[in-house]
Image 1 (cartoon, helix red, strand yellow):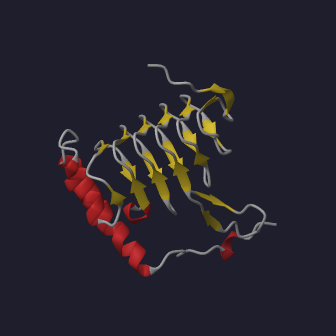
Image 2 (cartoon, helix red, strand yellow):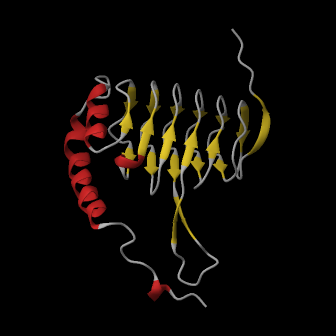
Length: 181
């Protein structure tokens, strides 16, 4: 029998909750007015909150990051409109990667084998030259290999091999990706 009265109500250090409140205030003010065409403004805001990002990244005003201090972005990463980064743990996105509109990167789940359903925080690692198409869901603990493409509205629950195209719910291998000149 599930016993949810034994769940941990405060799974993070107190400092984390203070930073999240401060981040929420900044998100609804400065983040919203920083124009994405002047790309370094949002990079600067993320850096102020401890994100490991380069100056050469783009994020839209509707892009949501839960915990910037657990985010790492490489050069030329684009976070499209309405992207949700639910990073309860570390999320890394390597260079030349596009995260299209309405993508949800989910770094948390619950251990359903225990009656109290404790929170599990898992990393998500996304390689170089990846394209995650519109509306995809990337589950906790997933690694998406270099050069991969995740099709629109896909639900990724298993790691994606480098240079492959996956799609569907759950996402399945479609074919190898080959670049042409």
